[in-house]
Length: 250
Image 1: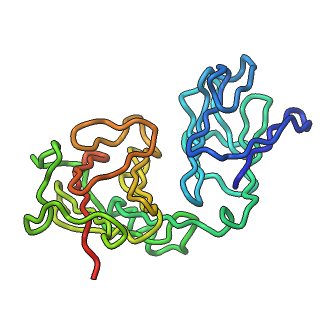
Image 2: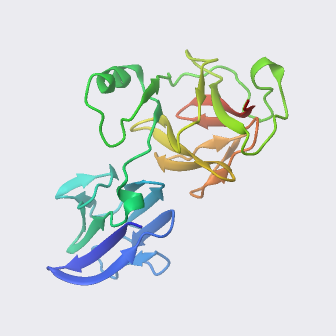
């Protein structure tokens, strides 16, 4: 399990284990990490942990959030990164074999220019695979849920024998499919809106990672919590509609 080491002026104040999927940081008492200092906003930043990755996001704080002395809005934390909030420091440590084993990211939807750029560079922390690009313009695909899926099939079986699939329903790439075989797959447009779908023993979950607005499932905007996807759900991310379905195995 990863942890944060909180310090000020070189004095270690405490260690915080990142045991939750979402850890909030701020001055108000309801935050998971409360720093009672006027330089810290009431709700200053948040860290989202999904499988082997941790994402830091500044929540439009007054004085900003810095990582290794550089201002950030969103940042994928790496072992040894130092998050700076006013005079306080939070050192991020990946201190267990599970967390240090490496990323399981798969970049599923990347704009075409970005996909070409990533393909020609060494694979980094989150660049294990580049999928197909999507454009942000959409068609009149339904967002009310209950889409029929490929070949009009409905009510596919659930359980370990079914593989999660995503099919694009709108835009230039409508009809293209992605198999959710990785533990974690990113969806969306970096810098605009990004979500992740995690494959767990009891189903597929979608979680918001980046962007001011949250993903929409069946016409309803999600909140910060992980949401269990159901067969035939319609997802909208970064203006692109896509259908989630379960494909029987064997």
